[in-house]
Image 1 (tube, rainbow, N blue to C red):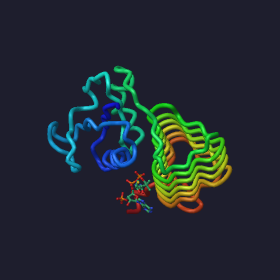
Image 2: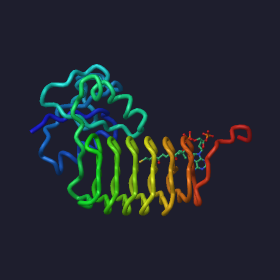
Image 3: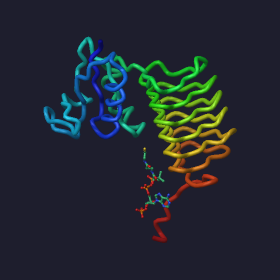
Length: 215
Ligand SMILES: CC(C)(COP(=O)(O)OP(=O)(O)OC[C@H]1O[C@@H](n2cnc3c(N)ncnc32)[C@H](O)[C@@H]1OP(=O)(O)O)[C@@H](O)C(=O)NCCC(=O)NCCS
């Protein structure tokens, strides 16, 4: 048994912990690391916040999950434990997910949620999360540090670059190539090529730019 330390005691951290507690008896929960809560206080689950992710020094039996919804924050708040301390960030697949034996998932920090479907030939990078009920079609390629939220459909052959976020209920259509650091707004339908760093919204998804002048 390993001692599980979760970075992020917010909604996502508590959700992740409930996956583990319900279904995965290989970890014993040790505590959250989170600067937003007073150490020694209790997060809303009643679990202890034991330190800051920026200063915590791992014990020999610790393993880590970084449970922050923003890929940028996930990267920043795990850096100390990942790089300086060479912490162990296992990848975890929820027991109700269906992952093809011919899919290739990153061996660090990758989390596949309940009732996700991952088809044959799919590649998913390290520290990428795929949330509940999302389906990833054959041969799709998803980079590192992505966040694929609940109820999305990622069609066969799609490419999604590092650090991109696909919000809930979006459909990424066959042939789409999504760049790095892209944000796809909830309920969007994406066709074609989306450049790096762009936010898109709607059906068909178009670049979303807030028009401050007219508001
Ligand atoms: C569309 C989205 C991605 C844009 O993000 P962003 O570029 O950071 O922009 P903001 O959210 O700050 O919104 C900027 C403005 O656009 C407006 N706006 C947001 N979504 C909009 C939409 N779908 N249609 C029209 N206007 C919208 C906001 O009200 C805001 O207006 P304001 O500046 O007058 O307050 C974001 O608004 C969003 O929907 N995020 C998803 C949140 C979510 O569902 N999370 C769940 C994860 S499980």
